Picture 1 (cartoon, helix red, strand yellow):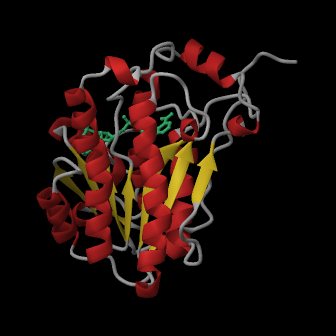
Picture 2: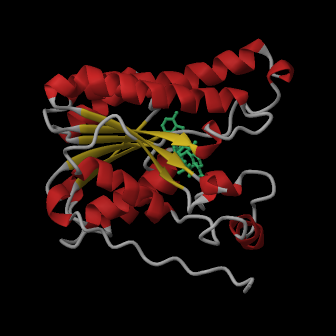
Length: 266
Ligand SMILES: NC(=O)c1ccc[n+]([C@@H]2O[C@H](COP(=O)([O-])OP(=O)(O)OC[C@H]3O[C@@H](n4cnc5c(N)ncnc54)[C@H](OP(=O)(O)O)[C@@H]3O)[C@@H](O)[C@H]2O)c1
């Protein structure tokens, strides 16, 4: 069997007409999967509001997403709001800045709360829950209140939720809570014709994955990908295309979609 890493097949979205002219708020949209979603959304004619904490990263991301539009670099179709996705004032600013929001994607996250449960301090655990779990609920409350009928919220999880590794109790509990909230809120919001879904990501080649010990180089990423059925880790665009599908399909709600190159089949 060849050891060469198979090349990704570029994402070509079939959803152009469904999302053209729609507005999406991307919480965590300045890097990785969220940024790739911004580029894909802009390339199909959507308006995009990027939210992230680091102002420098935000500016770079806004410029990158603006450059992805077929209609050129139009200021008001790509907006940036700097702040924490768990801050309800920041969320209100993002919605107000957009004026009208059809879809929300939450990809804000990071490598916090990692370690055996008994070796983490209570403050470490509470701090991670406050920052990461609360941002899931804050985004859900904002989406539930402000999205119109036909709008959608997409949350993030990961395949380790179903196949845990030691030292991941706290982050995986947050992913599990996001999945449960997805199903519960989908039922709660269905009468208002608002949809809620989540994505379980496998290994996706983003700055977050590259910060995981043992994944910091191209060689390490290729090695990690070689054990996955499709032979490589996923690209941010492939992960983001899953989010665009969930935004565009008006009959999908309460679902947890896995994008992992087949890793969970093994
Ligand atoms: N990549 C993977 O292999 C993988 C696997 C499983 C699950 N996931 C999940 O997928 C999601 C996206 O991951 P990624 O790989 O795209 O990560 P990433 O490249 O690190 O991007 C995360 C983004 O979120 C922003 N962010 C983090 N905390 C924030 C906060 N409190 N408020 C606002 N923005 C915040 C970051 O910018 P600032 O730091 O400037 O705010 C950045 O733009 C995460 O929830 C992650 O846990 C990823």
